[in-house]
Length: 350
Image 1 (cartoon, helix red, strand yellow):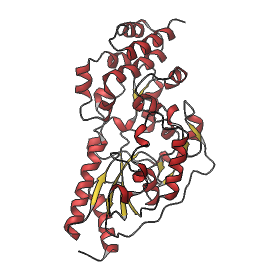
Image 2 (cartoon, rainbow, N blue to C red):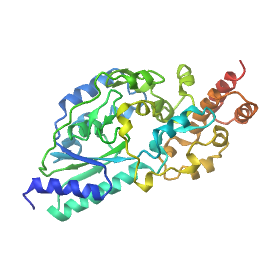
Image 3 (cartoon, one colour):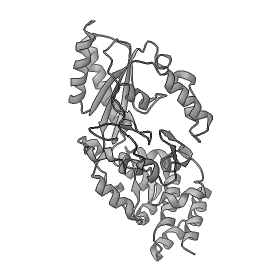
């Protein structure tokens, strides 16, 4: 096994570029401060129904408990922005089309990033022989943002996303936990300054203060993670967002420097891109499954898909077509869908 860990660390970074990653850094596994912040966040119930955040004890903040022997974490980033921010903003302004968070318009990132991480691990294995590792991409109890910050990928923005001077925040993160003593990278300094644009733009005021998010109010949580009824007080604020929300990223000055994705798998899938709400609401369950195959969107299921679109239709400009589409689902078998359809119809009756 090689002993020149500095050389290997440099090689890993070169290989990462060849594999399509836009950034890479290496950190140790010390996360005591992160553990304290997480404990406080959970105590305030800011995680809502995301009970998985409570599970696994300290494995989330102590990598060696999750993967025994881990002493370093390789963190990578991969850009995903599929179109200009001007195009994103135009879509958000059109109340009759469904806005989908731009990360979900291409192939499911979990699979894409994890496969590349495996290829990176294979390259390391060729160089050093058998070593202990495990690759992740939003797939296990991993504090990926804290690890990315520690590895110098970027700094934690006030919206709680990682920011990078070269590519803003439009990138996915992935990690490889390893048991080899690679050279550690230094964190970068924060550059949000006095800017509070992300806090002010948030439609539901989910960013309760700099660096602190109450997920229960976040539109991404409400349209993706929340299983049941969307609280009435947030429905108008959801607008035409039917899967996720990008507002805090679209307003961030650092995203003026964001790069468009070069990864073909993150190219826009036309059936999901800026489609009319009426057309999307008319999908059968089979159509939904077909059009979301290989997409992160499929995880919410057909019922929540209709729930979300019903809310967006309630926020659209009143027309006979909008009302007709809603009435077509007024007797849907799901009580969840019926309740949101009724609310939407009431918005057009005043």
